[in-house]
Length: 132
Image 1 (tube, rainbow, N blue to C red):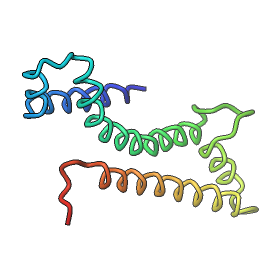
Image 2: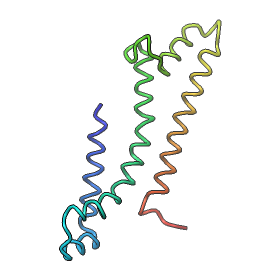
Image 3: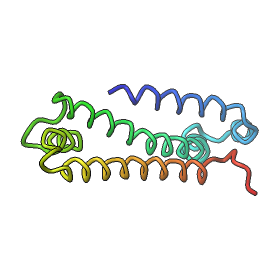
Image 4: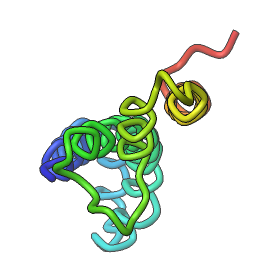
């Protein structure tokens, strides 16, 4: 619910650090309009960390939603959720263990996949990463 606050801090920190870079000071010295500096120089440099953070935030939000649904506080009955599937499987685990094993393992694989995607994007989009 308050994930946008962290995103705002990331964007603000990036803009404050980029503001002191030589290429931004050169743009200001050349008299470029502010909208051009923002669109041409600041936005592309801020976009990488925003994409990476968004990709790494999705699994955390999915896990939170599944936990709330498992407790019965999340998505209600006509809708389906990872947490509600795992809860239903846990209730009848002795008769049908696959109803717990398959949703749980697929949910774990989804979370791992999204985390690996976020790590890969961070490595690809990080301008400070060393190119070996």
